Length: 104
Image (cartoon, rainbow, N blue to C red):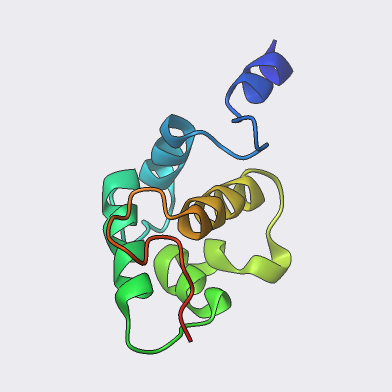
């Protein structure tokens, strides 16, 4: 039963859906810098709009604390990081002409 629920909580791309990601962010100890997916969109928009490039390993650690360590992530932690990365790279939640683009 639990495996069926875990599979149902993943999107077609294999990452967490927004509700599961939102719940994961709310339960995170120590707390993330965002209170949910809505604030996550603002955080990601700030990174996209930044005048300089910030490496993902830096902003993931800033956002999630020790849970943002990309190199050692596994299980739900890795699923959450992949869901955030997918949201960031697809431009979901962002608007404007550069949504989803990486500018050098």
